[in-house]
Length: 427
Image (cartoon, rainbow, N blue to C red; front, side, top):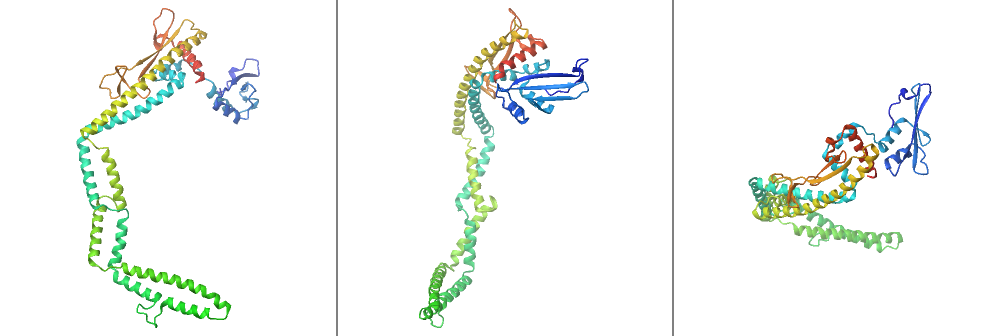
């Protein structure tokens, strides 16, 4: 197993000591990967031979599957394939959780599937119980918080901001405040593009000038000049579109002081919200969404509490059903496991001993926060179910079954542990 090589293991008068063993990998992925990575060869039957040698001068050699390997490789392999049992291992058997885990490992899917269902329902049940408790004990505090949120939502809903509205208003205010300068610039640009509004021939504008240039080219007899005409026509169309858009822009310019005042008032309303709730209007709307979500969890009315209590009771019934299914699976597995361990112990000089495994529900009173009624009794609904599992040992025929740590010596406990590991080898 990759331990230190001790010269004392070499027989007196010999030069070396050898020990070897054939290991059946049996689909153990971790062990198979270690063997493969070491470049060792696996025999046709799926087994591999490991060898260790130590010489009288203290040097050690390790081989795996016909290849020389570092001793650490054997240490890694042993972790996957070897369990060494001594009296210290008995401490594991003293823990109730470990005894329950033994049954669950032995039962496999018969327990794991109902246990997963039980845990899923239990998580939801605990969440509802916690929420109901919080709403009941913090009703006054939550009511005050709800009032503050309600006031904020009412203030925001009264203004009814639109996404990005603050940015749009800023641009609109800039236009309204500088309407004269904007009109002058747009008018001059339109005249330069489309010509004088009154049709003054001395101010034809870019469109008129391009039209005149196009006429000169199309009337020419030179082919090169005539080919330039269509390009001027394209420029004339583009400039005409720009002139039209400038005209439309001028129509939208409004120097109405009343409109500017209205927009400024709207901006002031939005700024009141952004000072209190967020940096911009989009942030204010996000705050409102979050406030509505939080308020949905702060309903402390009798109707809301009654609805939560109803949901808690419904989940408790479902939880009890899963707990009962889980208990029944464990009881069945416990009988099979006890029989298998007892049979295995006959080969460990404990032929008269007999193992019993009890599965009992942990009864509690109403003060237990995790109490649930199963089979007419209040029991503790823990994360692994409602069962307490205990391993009992009948030392010989006629002896009463006692908890294994009371009925067995240290050596016997080690053998019980070994028997359990052998039975659980498939798991």
